[in-house]
Length: 431
Image (cartoon, rainbow, N blue to C red; front, side, top):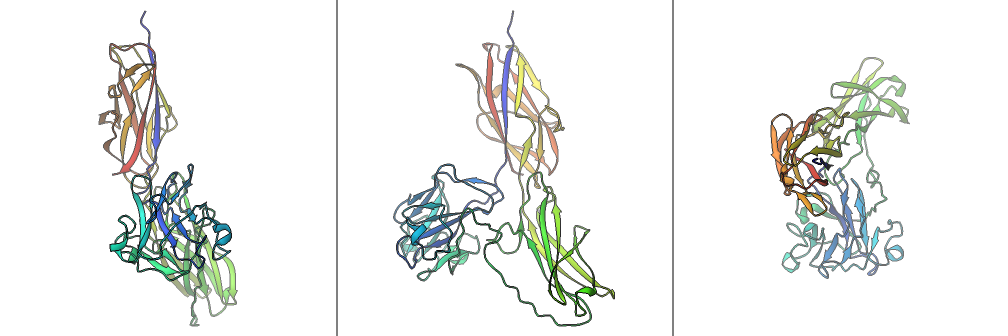
């Protein structure tokens, strides 16, 4: 009597990270205190977590001047502060946050640079001084001319040109526990010319998920709405009580803004929350704030923000089981219903996604079924063979759409019966 073969196939879905990577956001290489005050601040400007375990801080002195410990995950918008040994007690300013990592750093004051690498290549670098005297890889574009003693180089742009991307500034460090949305301070000054009509003097949009880029950037959250807060300063020469309503208009919808604080007798702060779907297309958007008084006079002001691209997929099956005889085949059909056990690919981002797919051979002890015996279909027409090398498939899965994922296994006639197992990996990529 022939024995059936039971195959267990593990299916893993992988969300791809944004194209951007970890950046060097600030460097203090010439502190007032020669020992214990040098520091390199890293920042994850993306909307995805990045594993920086084992990454290196490279300087003119050493390609591995500091090594980031295993298990270090940099969350979206999170900072990570690497500082010289003794930072906790010797740093120039005791109000600066403690370092996430203290190691003996050696940063030269002239014609030098620092880079962060993932052990295979440099991810980012900043140099200062004469490029002819700086080691290759420790600067991008043209090095910055340098900062005075006690001042840091702080990033304001990310155009791969140190001279334009960094400015000399008072140190303002963040560590992994800092809240990037509250870093820094701002004082807005507004002059109100009184009259009979209300006046919208300013609009704020928060959070700003990328403080290194000019303007306001909002990062979508997979499978969730992104909540943003709109604040508006509204004045009326006849007093705050003369305001009939303040309204935010976004995406053809009206959001009533509530009075949050009276700054003076005729100027107040209004606030509203707006939820944006993770499937909303990436792009630049505008919010209009309209204030109207009891006499029907009105004023308006608009503010812009960028909704960033989100590339992510989800698969509703993590294990698939085939049963087939040697010399026969078996199929597990996919569907477009995330509630069933049949495999479905769901684009949970706001960008059109293609996929890369690869797998491992199926093994049972020393017995092997080559992964090339496994075919897959995505939707009705896209058919391919799984190999050990990642292959790109043009499937154009639009935002919030689902496609069936079908697998067909052909078991060679010479296969020894047993329980074989392997894995298939799927990754979303830009279309």
